[in-house]
Length: 425
Image (cartoon, rainbow, N blue to C red; front, side, top):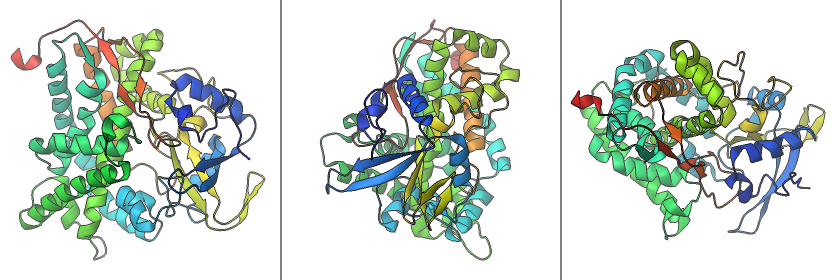
């Protein structure tokens, strides 16, 4: 049985996700009162098969499932609703599609290189990258924020962290756009979608393998060197594991900041009183404002967990093999947890959102970096382009099939009073 929303669309319908955020969240609010688990089916146009799943849309159940990886595993397709061969899942998802003990080993190796100390050392670089991008747009008076800032900013940070030369940035951006694009024709072009996706992945893997080989011979102070030389309990990441990790970093490592920057600007345009509160006291308000953007926009749409055994959760029996799709945006508007959840409040506290994933071993490793990036980008925009504001609605990715992994914004026009670049001061 598939529940439809008040709009008449099912969650599994690609059309559901092409609509404005407030319309999607209104439908989720109605569904949330019907139950914690909403039965759905996703069709597969290539093979004609149906993939049944439970949409998990309340905070308590998303949290409980996230905390129990032994019962609700990630290794059967955490980034896809359909089943994928293990090799294909890891190719695009790296260690987020793994279960323990492999997941724990990978996370230890990566986490030992991806430390708060290393990230804190990046702050000056992040500030400089953001300033350079604002320099490039500040004289124009009107730009597409996604193209000018939201997309290049976090990806340039990642490329600098990894030691990817700036000359390769456009290659990385184009490939990551294809993978993040959810089948949008603007990024796929006219070729075969699956082949285009594989070509993009192979481009990133080839670039990473070439760089890793150079760092094995001549280490530097970048993250690639740390990854190829870090050893935990006598084990390192294998050469064939580095490429998929770079795909994960180039895609999952930038999508939250990218989408939250664009959506944050749009949301602030709709809530001028909240913008004023933040802009008048950025030092005090930024930490809570950043988390509120992540809660309200919830850039990562879902992750899948698969039952490894039969059991009961919140009174509902389930069987081994049942798919549970954790819809983070729906959980982040649950009135059982959040007071007045449809209200955007830059000073909201407490704010136990699951925008970086639920608690447990798969909580986002890059949450600290994403928060720092978002704080920096909005602080610089408020300071340098104080009247910047959206002049169009966000244009969302035209995902071609089912719920997208990321609720991406591909265009958002903004306007502001032109000013001179600082590099010319």
